[in-house]
Image 1 (cartoon, one colour):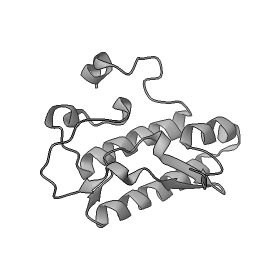
Image 2 (cartoon, rainbow, N blue to C red):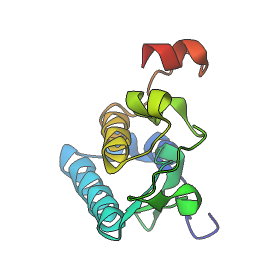
Image 3 (cartoon, rainbow, N blue to C red):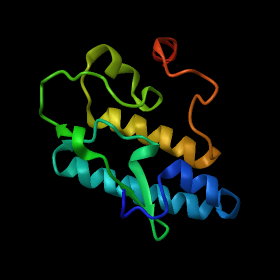
Length: 133
């Protein structure tokens, strides 16, 4: 995080949302999608993709927080940890992260980028939210 001088996604949006065009937002999302594709191309699943793991430096987004990543071919079930609002619904029942579950999280990041707000911001992050997801 010491190198992410512009903070994480929510901090960056709080500071810059009023000056961002749709073209800028789409460019950021393309950069994030490209990095996620690189992660998947290396045979990994991020397993913890959320707005806190998207950081900015010099107006460029970077995916970080790969400490929970796993091999795509891993058959082991995981303890579901992390940010519930970015976790794909099937992960709660299967306890398996997949490239598709990372794509779900990317969809929530797209929502966050478009709206400037965290997902489910008016809901507690508890079992009720998990059931709703």
